[in-house]
Length: 528
Image (cartoon, rainbow, N blue to C red):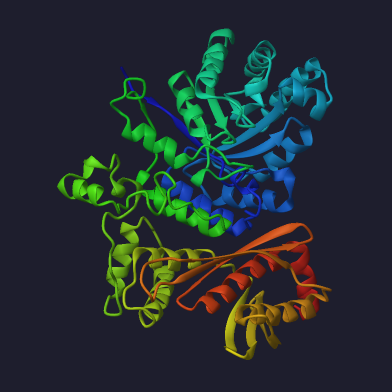
């Protein structure tokens, strides 16, 4: 029996970015898209162009740079949505318009306030209209898992007749269980006469923790495309995790119902992709996360360690190298050269330009002066910090802290703001409840003066963790700021947790000033 390909449709940049607080700039989206191209996904859903000017810009930017993957953009079943999709995708080598409308009774009645006949006609007209721009049309029956099967099958049959090449069956609210979802796929395949003219896709949410299980069950029963995200991020409890689906298919090749399926994913890029997405979105990966979690290939139990030493397969069903995780920690220090670092970066799955490696090497040497050993986690942090930079940014130039027992903490902070290659430097000092609070208040004073704000963006979340082991481990700080109901995420890394905290705060403010409206006001204020 010939093996069948499972197409991997990555929606990290669209559905994944809808995770609360996961807002990405167009440049950050492009960085992730380039990594997804190295991962070799089949389709990248780059955004929902009508949702915001930033989304449209990101889809257009990605379309210009990605040449080895299909680029999809989402559109409601409306002409104006489809027009903006087509415009954003005009540079794409392989464009796909992904249009959708809900087919469940609850959505039709309460959200759409339409009749079933109106939904059917709207779906058909949307697909026909989208075909004016491309033959690569995907149609989704939103809330398919709770839809009336007879009505949904009728819609599917008609949109295929109208020209849809991919039919997506979403479990939009994560309601199904595997047996139920597989039965739905089987019914669609048996009841839709022209289903063989399209690829059947699934898009499962994780509200009950069954997104991956439902996706695998759907593959077994006829789905040939899976929509998923890196680290399983997405609305509410998230989506089916790409890395889990891919590694299930790669690992369980002896299971009769899965042995004939494969993907084209370069699995050695899974871990680097996971780290990059986590860094840029500010959504940390839980340590016990399957495949890419920090503990996924670490063993503490004496019994497990004994088994691993005797034969790895006793407690590891996957090779760590297969997903881009080194089997052993590489210890680098101040005597290590550029070549050793470059080789380690390659082993970790990074393909970087020479100038980028040169910048990372400078920071690597600076880090070596602060700690005895530099671990893989430290190297990944350096890379992701460099890749996450923006051309227009606030930069920390200097800080001084005065704090101790019986002393009111004070901080002096100097920052430089660079816009259009022009630099402005500002310095302020403030008191605080602690050294970090004092530093943040100093920065807030600068920001408020620049923008004439009554109050700076509000700090709504602060997280600190150690990146690697040892007393000299780097600290990683994640912060989230809120301004006018918009969240801005930042990340900072240093062996000094105060410096890491300031870097994280400034990183979030970088995203704040990259907001187009705010940036325009800033340029006017600075006379740029």
